[in-house]
Image (cartoon, rainbow, N blue to C red):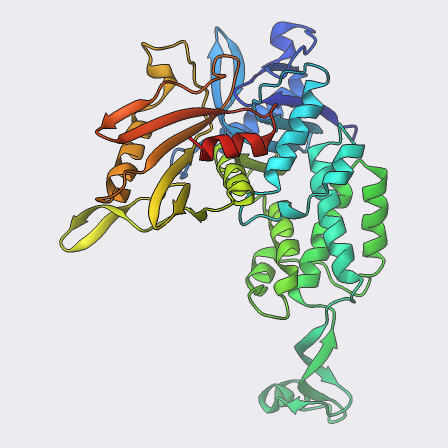
Length: 438
C-alpha cells in the first residue's frame, strides 16, 4: 500500500478534502486529508477519547457546521494508520528563517528529543539527520533501533539456558516420573524428561524478532529495509514472540547481563506496544509514538543547564521541600525543574513551561497562568533562608509576540520573579549563561 505523508504542528487543524475541496496545504498550521485517511484518523482518535482513561488527550474532535475537524494539542511525534496515512506532528517552534521550515523544525525537535529522560532517543544519530534534512521521523526512529541492535549483535547473539520438557528416546536431564508414566506406559523406549538447552530462543530475542518484522512492514526506506533483512538472517533459529506481554515481563534489564539491552527493550516497547507517554488502542492503527511537548522542553532545558551551568551545583526535579504538613507528615511535594546552588545558598529556581506568552497582552497577564505564578511563589517561600531569597525564573519558548524578558515581578520584599524567552534561533550557550547571570 502506498503511504500518504503529511506534516502538521502542535495546535494545527486537520480537515477533510471532502468537506473543503482540493485545497493545497500551505503551512504546518492546517492540512487537508483525503476522506479515507481523515475517517481512519478520526475513528482512531474517537476510540482513544474514553473519559475513563487517565491523562490529557493528544487531540480534540469538533465540528463547524456539519464539517468534522481534528485539532492537534500539545503532543508531538508520529502516527501511522493501517489505511496508509503517515502523520508527523512537530512542535510549534517560531523560526526566523522561512526556508524549509518543516526540515528546520524537525531537526530542532529531534535534537531536543535526544535528551528526553528515560527514553531510548539518546542514540538518535545527529550526523545522519544533517545529511537527511527531511528524513521521516519514523525512519529516524527505525534507523536508531537498527544501529543500536547491530552494535549489540556484533558482540554475538544472546543465548541462555531454557528449561524444556519433552518425550525423547533417551534419558536426558531429569526424568519426570508422573508424566512419564502417563505418556510411556506402553512405550518403554521413550522417556519424558526435563532438561536445559543453551538456546537463542529467549524472550529478549523473540521480542527483537517480533519488532523487526513489524518494522519491515512500517519502513519505506531502502537502507532501513536492507539492514532489517540482514539482521533477520541472523535470527533464523529464533522464534517470533506470540505473547509480547509475557515475554516483556521476563526481560529484566536491571540484570547485569541484560543491562546493555535496556535501550533496545525501550525501543521495542515503543514499536510493539505503542507505549511512549500515552498508550493507544484500536484496529485502525499501525503505530503511534507521541510525547507531550512540555516534557520534552523541560528535559532539554535541564540538559542545557547541566552542560553550561559551570560553577553551580545543579539539582533537577529537587524533592527537598513539601508545601504543607498534615498530621505530622509532609504533603504535596515541590519539584522545581532546576535548582542552581552556590555557596550553600539556593541561588536560582527555574521552571520551564511550553506555553505561548504575549508580551503585549498586559491586561491578560501576558498569558501567564495564575497556577504558574503560585507555583513559583511556593518554591520561593520554601527555599528562602534568613540570609538569602532565591531568584525565581520562568522560562518559556520565544515567539513573535514574546521576544524579550518581561519586567520583573515582585512577590514581596526581595522575592522576585523573572519571565524569560528561550529562542531556538539563538546560541543556546549564550542564552543559558545570560539566564544564570540574571
